[in-house]
Length: 345
Image (cartoon, rainbow, N blue to C red):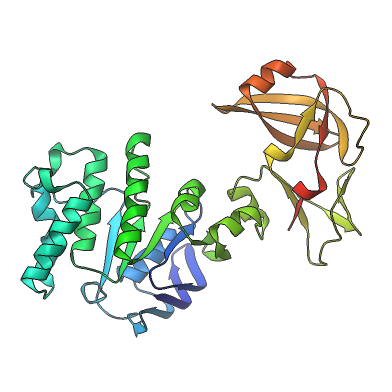
């Protein structure tokens, strides 16, 4: 268990401000946010690598705030592996054991199990220089776990890998966490990674926590405009509210129900903005006439920007649907947004 209480770290030009997080024992917790949000700084504070200004860090009930890194019982895996190039795979994995008092027989059994699970047994005598990116990251994970830490910190462990190795290590991490039962805390800026691996997540922005909760809840019910945009809601607009209607510039959007008083925005996923060539007579709720401004190729799909009045909506279409509808810039279309697809923030 990791308990962070009113943690504050002040650096020139940046600060982590009054961070409160509770990570349950054995949980896979993800810390999400863009570059520069303070994610790695928080990880290094837990590991004891940076001094804190105020607050407390507790692991399994033990206050480790001012304890040296080597006495915290924490393992850390960096995105750039941080392996020793002059040592073999086995020498890298066992490097930290010299600083820990362990039972030799139990330690050997644990090492053999780790190397087997991570597919490293055949690579034990190989030089680090001759490993692939995925193999290097598996060595880094084995080294961090070799000392049997109570907590494993992961600093964007998939970021430096190409897509094939990234998929491999994602599955390795998920299976390993299920088998060893150690608390994992992973920093990432990729929400897809958090959805696949994490149980709960904290959203960090400019040194402050904006939302904490189950990953699926953060994805479906973002609490702030920042979180909404981070989880892929491409349409986030300031709005005023009149009963069960949201007013965005010159448009009125029907909602399922009146929002709470403190709400100031609406958010709509791009895939929930439905584009039609003709207006359907059966339903006039949130149906607006517009004009295609731009079509952007996003690889497996296309983003279509449609101006309706003064509001520009972003919709997402497959390549096949785009070709079938023959959507070109300047073409008039109708868009439809179901009330159930509008999130109020």
